[in-house]
Image (cartoon, rainbow, N blue to C red; front, top):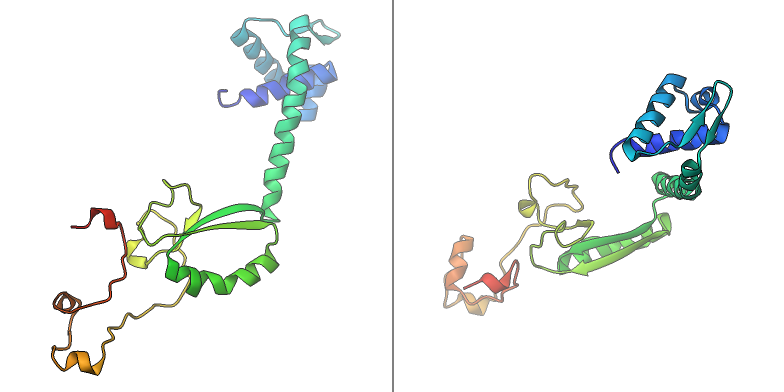
Length: 204
């Protein structure tokens, strides 16, 4: 449906209900000439006369009645759908899909779940834990938690935790025979317990 077609169909329905271009225009807050022009354009587009017009009255043709029979329930459904969606502004509800790393699920998300459930009982969280750097939009997620350096510039980001400082831990016995690392690159020469991050399938 082209942009504006829904308004034109609503105008046709209003004229058919009011049996008057003047009353329909007043009801819709536009001029009678605008209504008449819209209906004439609709009839020219579909190639069928929808309204019979006289100087005193307006009435749907047989084709117009057929269109009205389908149009009335369809517009009612559309209006109800818009009202239902608009109500979400005041009462958030529905399913929210989140993608979070395993560590963030326990340290950032879990402590907030109780308060979230109390404040927004109509929201259902669908949480997927994955340490790979996935595209949350391409994978169908609504939001996610990620390290700041991995967030793309065109994404909307909100800080959800304080900065976390990584540390290197080793036993005194281990460092008796090995020098202590002074930079992350020095770890390449050490025996480490690795925690995979990112796409492990493409690693050498």
